[in-house]
Image (cartoon, rainbow, N blue to C red):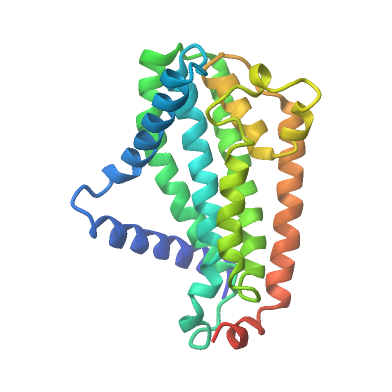
Length: 255
């Protein structure tokens, strides 16, 4: 299969999956937006009101962090089981197995972009002013997409050999959530000597840079973003090579 045919098939599958998903619910696309809003409401009440741990403009602070995190967590979680869940197709079609996590990643990214089309106007009107620094947002989205792709490919490559690992990945993402600074400011609530450890988690740094751009109206940390970009590209290359090397093995072990 040529690269153009591969990409066309991937986007066709994404469109088909999204249409099938929204037809299962009465509220259709609204669920893509309501989920982060419901989660934000819970964390706002717990940390912003009951525990008085909020920051200035805490609603938007929380929403920016939460939407970015949900994109990462859901996409990686879904990608991890993508090859294993496609086991009924593996013996029927000859297709590079990277197809399945790629489709899953694009599918969750489309949902994220839909949420952003509603988040950004509200943020511009209520949460702060639009500056030229917002032009860095597409780069942040691309870097996060590549990070998700690398993590998702790697998880998808391993899970067929250890199916129970998908549950461990889910638990690990929950633990990582609390070290990412979604509902608290790392610079304010974490001791200086511990901050570099937390920023080894690339999502912690990405969320900080999203807030820097969208809430503070400042340019992101280009050096940090460059490191995350490089690490993501390396991770994609390694995971892709692993999947291709094991391409003929997956149909046998996923039966």
